[in-house]
Image (tube, rainbow, N blue to C red; front, top):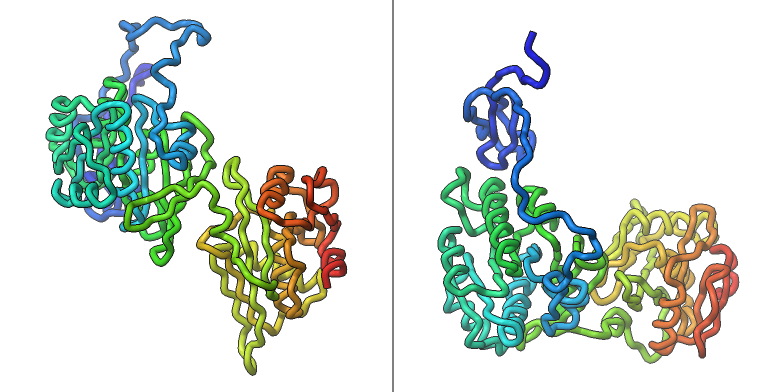
Length: 455
């Protein structure tokens, strides 16, 4: 019988694409779903050995004595980007910025590199997708030329590290991590094993030098970050860059942040001069009309610590002589819209079973939080009855399946933002708190009461 702590010797297999390890050979990798990539490697597993204590890099100290000078964020000068990052770029931090092609990632990061080069020290931009001349043309267009901003076009990890040794930058931007390959690792260019190796090497260099590193990542068809999931665990900050191609609005969200809040949002507008921050984006998400129209209601959403006004629109029309009624949604959660639609019909007495219902948000903003339920229900009822809601009114509240209106978090900040934008009346659930100066609150306990007050 083998002694305790000793594993039985057996062959090992590994996927050449993603590095998945398996005790036996299989035709298809369970991790990346690639065929014919599982290969036997190495010798049989060696017995486990006890690990003796070794030298330490630095002695352990009380947490109150740990220095903070090297871990404080340095502002980039772009207020919306700093808001998402939690104050700015931290020395030695590694950031992963992902977004669809053409959304404006490279343009924004080039402006960030220009600001850092002008204020803090040399910045190095390494492009694996464009030539240095193409990046120079973009820099001229947005006014991002500086003598301490360096450009390089490389696709080999060793060449990237050589540029880092030569320039010694305070900020490194790699566009993108999928285009750089490491000769020490097998696998196709842009594959999971290559991406993991390149990201791991750059992370180690960034930590040892105290150099902030920003890696641009590709996204899949459904918008997720391409590559192994360990890539997101490896970096300190994960930032997603969203925006519709037909719209100039761009939203930057931090889905992971070790140095600040992970739910903040930054708003930008893209134009001929580059990507410009929008400090007050509420006006972009609300339509400006001379008179109210049926099927429209304004609510206030919370993106991190920022309250934003958003408009929800609905259209209810006949099916036109039979057939199944249509339900189309844009910018809202389809499952939540279906639930609110059923509550409006069952608890509010609005007939929708034989009508087409269309619901959308204004300005390209995505609304997923329950605080917009009441506004959505009022917009649907307003469209079905063809009666406009009162002008200057906002609605806040979560709608339950029994029709009750529930409180939402941050009601005070939401109402204060609505009052600042000039709204005078707010439809809110009971116990919503004190009304801001110049605003009147109408408390409604359920959906039926709300419809009775308005219609």
